[in-house]
Amino acid sequence: MVIKASSAAEIRTLVSALAADDEVKREAAIARLAVIGARAVEALGRAYDDADRVTKVAILRVLESIADGRATTIARRALAERGDVAIAATSALRALLDSPHGPTGTDALDALVATALDPEADRRLRLAAFDALRDMPEGVRVRVADALAGDPDPQLKSRALELPRDAAAADSVWQDAIEGRLPEDPATLREAAQTRASSAALSALQKMIEAIRAREASAPRRARNAWQSVRGSLHQALALRGSRVAMYDLRETISGTQGPLPTSFLAALHVVGDESCLESIATAYARAESDERWRAQLATALRAIVRREKITRRHAVMKRVQKIAGVDLTAA
Image 1 (tube, rainbow, N blue to C red):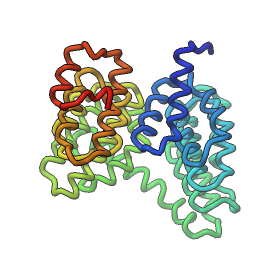
Image 2 (cartoon, one colour; image 1 turned 60 degrees about the vertical axis):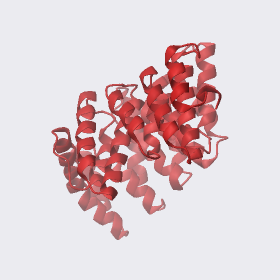
Image 3 (cartoon, rainbow, N blue to C red; image 1 turned 90 degrees about the vertical axis):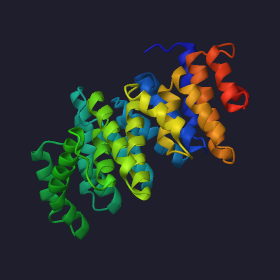
Image 4 (tube, one colour; image 1 turned 90 degrees about the horizontal axis):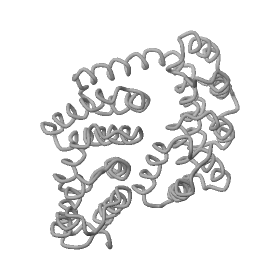
């Protein structure tokens, strides 16, 4: 695949940003690279070997979203690195199970099954590999579960028995949420969304965001924050797919916030935010007089949108932004 010089430069910049200490910058780079897709895979592969462990996890998260067969080799190597890197590798492999390229799906399946059944592997990794098989045909899950039934680790044996029931429960929670019936506990929906939001219909995610926002408004403060976190994760899922179907909610949330939002909201802004978001960002910036970190994150998001949308300082919206914020945010 031939990549234009301008695209290659953008990819290099984004891959470098995966190593950023700033979580918003790192999450935004993950989402933007996911949107770029297969064109970024080679650069991600080259960066992987010399990366630190945090950056390796970020690279594997991008590869999970892209679901390109070339990620199989990287993910297999990552399985041997233990800890969070290996856990991230199971998610990257899970995304390849449904690959239209038969050998890719087979390789991913073999790697996950071997890891789940490996008595020398860490328990947490074996559990993650087994969980990654939850969406496989029942026959595959049953064979692996039967093999684990004789495992000396009691937690793995228990998980093998529970997985079908847990998967069915998560499916029910997700389907109910799509139909507008949210669970009492936001954590259950967030868990269900982790493996389902990436393939759900965009219109279904949009409706779910609307339903969650309504629930937030009537929830106690602690629950309200948890629901907002779920809503942010859905916005990030939409951004990973380059969708702006819920832009109005993102824009209104930014303009109406009384304090910092979960990282997922800003990451989504970095990727899909447009001209219509700029005044909302300026409003949030002006309101956050004493929170320099939040202000810096807002200014960075605004500059990312301005660069991506090629909005000049002479544009009318930029004059309004400066008036609202009281400062030129493109130079902040």
